[in-house]
Length: 117
Image (cartoon, rainbow, N blue to C red; front, side, top):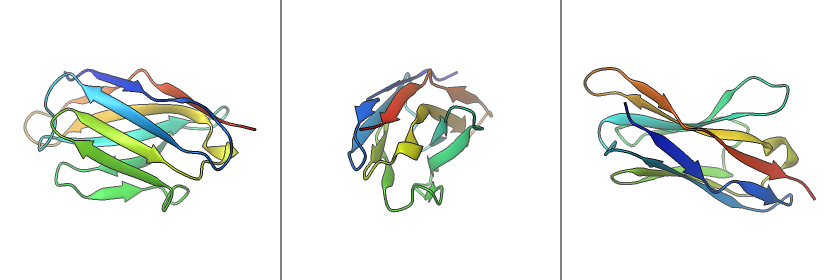
């Protein structure tokens, strides 16, 4: 099972930017769909962005045009977040789902993002 470690969270004012990183314990490029989820206080977890093993990307409507998910093969996936808003405050989690071969999923431990002045 692949292990995931996130980093890059922090405190940023509204309108600011952050780049989250997720490093996997093994090569996932071409094998795994990778995604970023978030859970805000009092809310359900939601998928923010996904990049399939094919390279196709998907974004939640709330972040389209502001967030970008990208892979740096073979083991790192990033979430570039621009024009951050207070409602983006949440714990962000990296997620991996094996799409080729035996099914398997993994979660990272999460990284806190706080958008506040």
